[in-house]
Length: 107
Image 1 (tube, rainbow, N blue to C red):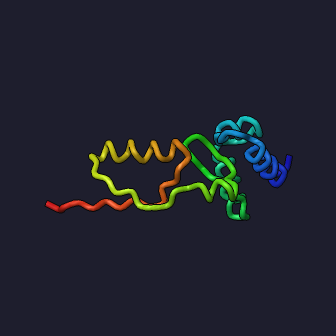
Image 2: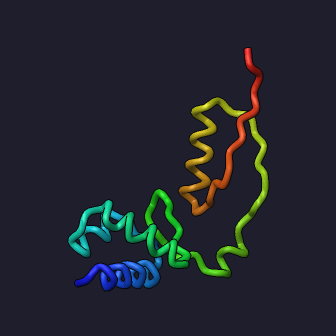
């Protein structure tokens, strides 16, 4: 299998899956390193593939899914540990954190 064939197969596997697929799973399937898959995904994204990376793996985001996202600012007050936990919950449930702003007093 050539590099181009593998990338096409990786993209097809992600498109055909109903669940996110991890780089580790793809690496085993195509007998390459996890880092090779990460590189393949980066190149596929550069070529315009709408591959989304999450802690659970890769998936293809459809136009319908993009329209369902909440895009706004969430303001809260947490300890650093609770902030991390909240961000992980957002990502684990399919959200994307685009930017984080920390505003605090300097002592």
